[in-house]
Image (cartoon, rainbow, N blue to C red; front, side, top):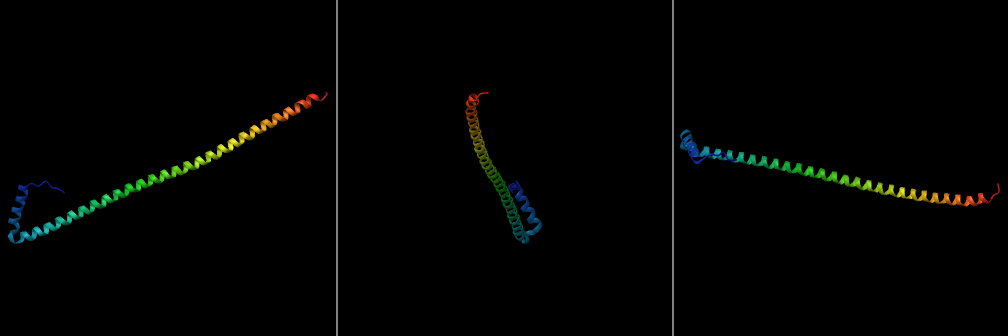
Length: 121
């Protein structure tokens, strides 16, 4: 996380710290500051890592939901296709039965017609 601090600004801060803290306490203060900065950097890094993990998890959940939806649609599509095939078979069978019935009716009409014509009225 850069703060855009130049060399001259850093030198000014170091001189002020030397004047305020003195040469005896300055090394310990710098150690403490270094530890805090390290902990802050580690905390920010952990936070970023957790956020990235959560984002990846959300993306994976979305992909999983999309795949589940696609599988459901495919399953429904195959079920619908099965129903369509069954319906087509039944329609075909009904059409064949209708054609047979028409032929039988024609045969019956044809067989009765000569008999009716041969009978005297």
